[in-house]
Length: 280
Image (tube, rainbow, N blue to C red; front, side, top):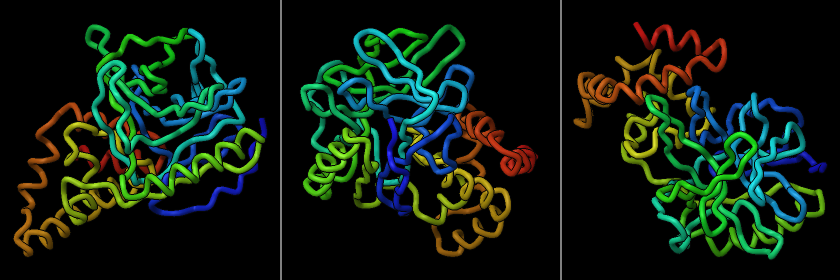
């Protein structure tokens, strides 16, 4: 499958970027993490007549599932980018929320959504990414599994759904014809902390979803955190919002998230330098 790679660059909207090979764009959305702690991104691929979302990284390519099997695609798929999204808890075959982000469709033209789920294997854990097609399905090895009843589904802002759904129908049809990639706009996703604090640290304000920021935001936030934490915390403190001690407490309060951020900081040379400073 060939999809013309003319995706427009925007700061806020969700959009798909065509991939040739397995290199993941720097601003791709992190949906979860693999059992080796490496990030998993959100991808989609056309399999027969279905457009199916799944998980991706540079080792596995894009993994989508159908009919009990998992398929690893090494080229000719798309990766999701953007910032305007959230995750909503869902159980089994519960009704899909109205704000659910439409990532594809099955052969009956029914929408398919993006989901993720926490799994534990003894001392190891993973947060798998997959599709929601009535139930949540994900790939494990070469098998499609649906045993993760308590999962989460990706959503976008309610105010943009009517426009986005119409856009989805048109652009998914274009993808069916091996044409342009889909883009979807929405209002800026809600934040737990203010803008100043999020400039200093990555995801710590979102206790439920430490992996809901895209990679470009991760780089900006972490590098800025390493370089400017004292100055910016003091500036925020002057506004009566938070002190340096408050920031450090937030960062250190959850060792699990702290270690995950350290793992993510190993993704490229620039971030490895940031990790060294982050550990000091």
